[in-house]
Length: 279
Image 1 (cartoon, rainbow, N blue to C red):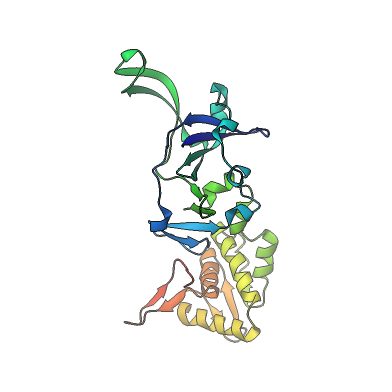
Image 2: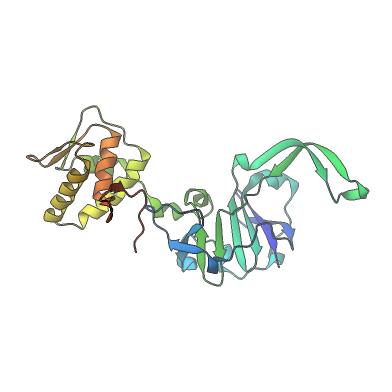
C-alpha cells in the first residue's frame, strides 16, 4: 500500500493530511545495495553514497508518525486551503517513509498545458495560474522501517522535518569562537574579526579534538601544521604561535588540527583531504 501525506503547518492535533492513496511518488531505493555511512560532518558524500542514522526511533527528534504503526485511514483528505500550508511531504511506500521538505521555491504558479487522461475525454487543457508542488527526483530522507534507519544526503534540508536533528552539526557559538581565538598558540591580528560559518563548524570540532590531547601532543600537531603550511600561515617557533590575520589563515590552522594534510606513499605528493572518513 502506498500513500502520500502532507504535514500542515501550525496543525498540532492530527497534523497530517492525505493527498493521494495507492500511488508511490518516489522511485524505490534499495538500501541493501547502496553504500551508507554513519553521519559525520567532516565527510563529503560521493554521488552514490548516503548518510545513515541507525536505531532512529530512539532519537528525540524521530517523528511519532515513524514510531507508530501506520494506517492511512487515520488521516483525513487535504483541503484546497491547506495546500499552501504544507511543511513537508511523506510518501509511504514499500514499508518505508520517503520525506521531502517543502520550501517556497517548491511551489510553481504557471500557465500550463495538461495532456493525457483528463475528464470528459479531453486530450489536453490549458490551465491558468495553476499551483503545483515540485517533487524532487531523490527525496530528502528515507526512513526504512525494517532496519530502523534514517538515510539522507544532506542534513540542512531535513532540519525542518526533524526538530532538533541540527544538533548533529552545531556551529561554535560566539563565546566558543572567542575562547578559541584567545588560546596561547594563536596570535590574532587586530583587523580580523569576522569568522566564516565554515570555520565556526571547524572550530567546534577542533576544540573537541584539542581537549583530548596532552600538551606534548598539541605541540606535535602544531609542528605538523608548520611542516605542511609554512608558506600559507606564519608560525613563530619562539612563541609557539600562529598568526591569524584572515579567515584563510584560520582555516589552514583548523584543517591542520583535524590532521587533513598528508603525503602520498608513491610520489611523496603533499595533499589536503577535503573529506574525512574513519576506516
